[in-house]
Image 1 (cartoon, rainbow, N blue to C red):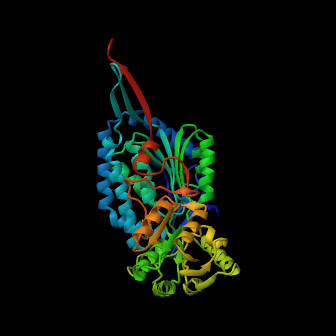
Image 2 (image 1 turned 30 degrees about the vertical axis):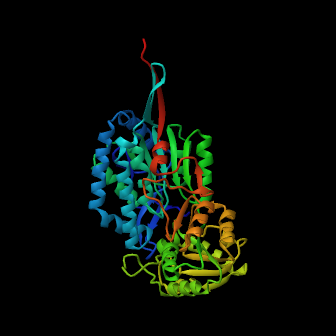
Image 3 (image 1 turned 120 degrees about the vertical axis):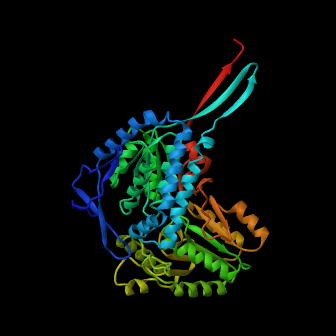
Length: 488
């Protein structure tokens, strides 16, 4: 990470209802991945900034925890309205700093709005349980209470949706929040803070601190931060989980993925290819639910031919162009890592039937890489095992469904998997035996809605309670049991 000298156009942190300059002279450029244009600079905040934000959140918690739950919900309803009113503006901001296509950015905004819709159901979500007569003249009740200050650490690939996985529900449950967005996509986080305040959120309930490692470590170590919600790469997720847990915090750390899509001999080839192309190449493959490994069962030559032909037809370019599907990866240094993976795949003997480096050489600016397809990949190859996080498909061949399921079982990751078939027996076998937390049946991106947990397994998740759904409510609350006797 290259640190540059402080410039005048520097984003501010949002602390206690105020836009505050970071206590640092170091910043990073925030660039448009499609053009290389510098959009703004972001401060590399320090532990001092984290302490200021956590203090503000701690003070706000003293009042916010006692705010009636329906009143919290009303603020979220207003926030929902403001997000909807600014839908296009938010999507364009995502395109600018993330690079994804406008249509996909528009969809991301909608997914974020749906998270707020779920959180606005706080009066129902926060309900406890009671049982009359657990013994003679004795009743028992369970109430939910907030934890305190929550730290959220979010990635570049979904700069709106992932923060909205976290802070609306945490705040609806009575907590206060300190958000550390990706330093690659910080502008959207500031816009969310602006709109949330406009919706009526009290000062200190939501705080935003920009930066990198020091901010992350500050949140993991601060004794007043009671829980950490994280989304990012596997090595960092493991680090966050271990360090935060060692400091006595609750942790949910969503990690990497290697999602297998099994194409059965009876699959509708055209439909399967359509779903796989959208899954693998949408968002430039930079999402934890992207198809990155295709398991072709049986001969499959018609499928392989159609997949390559469709990849050849993809329009590559700036996300503001309506015709574009494949957009740039987030930064040039990440593209360099992807190129190393491609070279490694060739060295290991995989067949590179579609080389995206050709388009990379043709594009004059931006961090572009064309759709890339390897065939005859074996499970022991690096490109079959590691998350590449780019528009690269690794195709494995399997003699039957059992062998395809074995490929999934041997993967260290377990975020998602999909099968394409018309065979009900194969569907049931896949459902019962696929070793992943989110499964698709003829669905390219089997990501869950906000009222269900985002349920990765194995090295795709560290923790016990997932984001969203009832898991999210349980993560952001603690239970108090009351046992009452009435025969006095």
